[in-house]
Amino acid sequence: MSDLAVAVPVPGRGKPRRWVFVAVLLWLGIGWGSTHPLGKIATETGHAPFGLIFWQQVVMVLVLGAIALVRRKGMLMTAPALRFYVIVAVLGTVIPNGTFYASVVHLPSGIMSIVIAMIPMLAFPMALALGMDRFSTLRLVGLAMGLLGVGLLAAPGAALPEPAMLAWLPVALIGPLFYAMEATYVAHRGTLGMDALQAMLGASLMGLILCIPLMLALDQGYSPWPLGRDDLALALSSALHALLYASYVWLAATAGGVFAAQSSYLVTAAGMIWAMVLLGERPSATVWLAVAVMLTGVALVQPRARQTTVEG
Figure 1 (tube, rainbow, N blue to C red):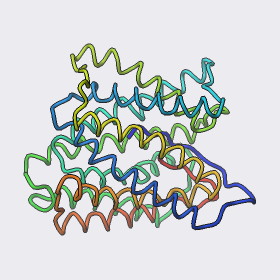
Figure 2 (figure 1 turned 45 degrees about the vertical axis):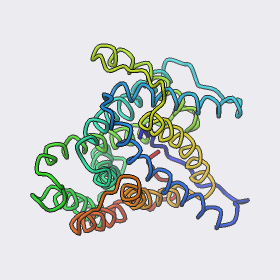
Figure 3 (figure 1 turned 90 degrees about the vertical axis):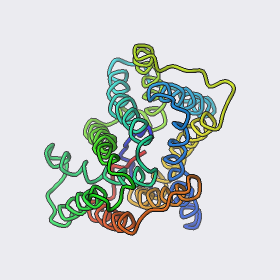
Figure 4 (figure 1 turned 45 degrees about the horizontal axis):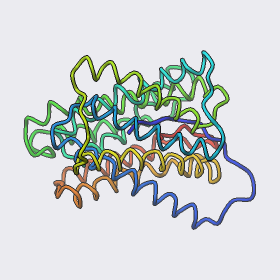
């Protein structure tokens, strides 16, 4: 859920066989798709958002730190790098994760898996405004289809089991909006010579530091001991994200960013299936229609260049 968007160049020769790429793509989709229902399970005993974010970032820093030790490649500690970590932590962790945990308590996990597909659609007009992309009628149609998908979810009595849930749909959309802002920022400014894992370790550590005063001020801290089902779900989803992100970076660097970006379709579909398996959710026909419309929009908006901005 804490994401870092990176532009990854397409490499040259010496690639593994295609079935390896497909296997990693499936691992990304199935793994990331599980993090939304796991996130919902993490909230089932009433833990508040910033307490959850604190422990999530602890796990992320430990896992990414271990990977950094193995790679012998640590964080960049310069003033511009620290500023980068702060901006990415705010845009990609503190605000979107806070709104995720606040809204997933009230919304079905499957709905959360659908709205996350809005990221590339929201990033497209931002890129246009900054002159980073060119206008395309097809991609504008894709953006319209994304809005139609949200409209289907918001239609009274069509997708949400309870009318009161509708008030939380705009809150759930704050996360994709800030992830899109993060993606646009990183694509526009770059990563200051850091690779994606270095950048994400720094952003995760900064997210942890920024979260502490918010957690204490709002009295949202808690101890996870003894570990319960909710604590294990949070730890698993956080560790999975770190490992999946490492896999994503490898796939984007070897198979190309456009190929790796196809994981976004699998994440939404797998998230729906995981919600059915882990939480017993049974989406209505309107929800499945919204999925089809949303993913068609993603397909139209997705850039086709040899270098692409993608969600972590």
